[in-house]
Amino acid sequence: MNHTILESATDEPTARVFASARVKRHTTSSRVAQTIALLILVAMLAMPWWAGSGSIRWAIELSCLIAIAQMWNLLAGYAGLVSVGQQAFIGASAYFMFVLASNFGINPFLAVGLCLILPALLAVPTYGLLHRLDGPYFSIGTWVVAEALRLLTSNLDYVNAGAGLTLRVLAKYSLHEREVAVVTLCVIMLLVTVGGSYWLLRSRHGLALTAMRDNPVAAESQGVNVKRLRFLIFVAAAVGTGLAGAIYYMAQLRITPSSGYDPNWASICIFIVMVGGIGSIEGPIIGALIYFFADRYFSQYGAVYMVVLGMLTLFMALYARSGIWGLYCRFFDAPWFPVGRKLIRQSSDKGT
Image 1 (cartoon, rainbow, N blue to C red):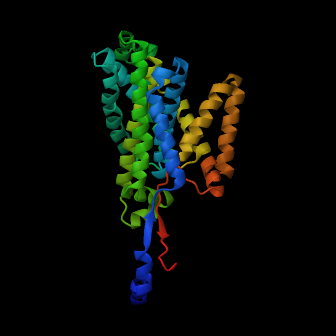
Image 2: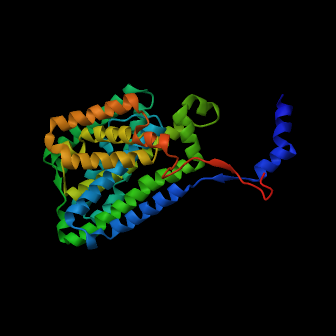
Image 3: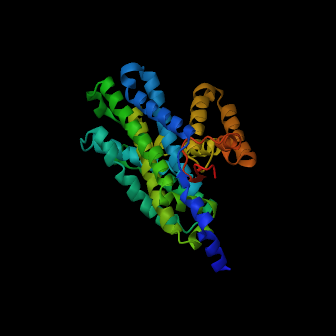
């Protein structure tokens, strides 16, 4: 039977079909979407010269939400690691940046890059401790790690314990200089988190991640090193999340243990990714936009607002697990950031 299949796959008509086919990786919609994305990044870089301080703060916050959600999506949507403790890396990275800038006199904008060392180092023993846990046990373990770091920071006099830290060194820079630097960091962050995720998912490692997302047992049987890949994704997600945390609290100019290690960061990630669409590049972007504007205009309603967000997340989990982006894809074949491959048969001159 194998000989029959081989012969049928290598006969002349089939060979002509494969010779006349091409692999399609971009679509008209993706070219349009990616062009718009680049224009938005360029407009962001120019914001200090045309936008007000309030609009710049909005852009910074939205960028951080997109980056954090994209990292959580990579972690849960592809590696199958549902973490509710990513605030550990947000707080640790932000605190380290404050310490480098305030206590060691390092340029605060340079300190943002240096502070990524800590979440990377922290992620290694954390994963080594938790990787044997599955499902909810892994999730609870990540939350315990985050709470342990919060308690440690709250009792550490070197970082002013529970009173927190203020980034006073930024006072020597003008408002315009700070806005230019932070907006530039946000653009770099989006390129690293969203652009990096897109590049990764389009690579051969992305094929392994997609296979692991769909069926980790089958992927491992085909030669994918699931354990190693999950470890690398966990570390990468920690670094990307830490970068967003450092930039966010630099813009806030102040951090405390209760804010840096706030469990609400995990809730925000879950809402954004579940509502927008897990396991896609586009989903976290859509979810972040929904959360951002909902928080701007409806957070004044307090508990009612939070209940509505929770109910919406539950509804999407029960009846639309692919999120808003999944619903969009049911009706439109127009991806923004396609990561798959399509084999297109080209017509010959004879119309075959």
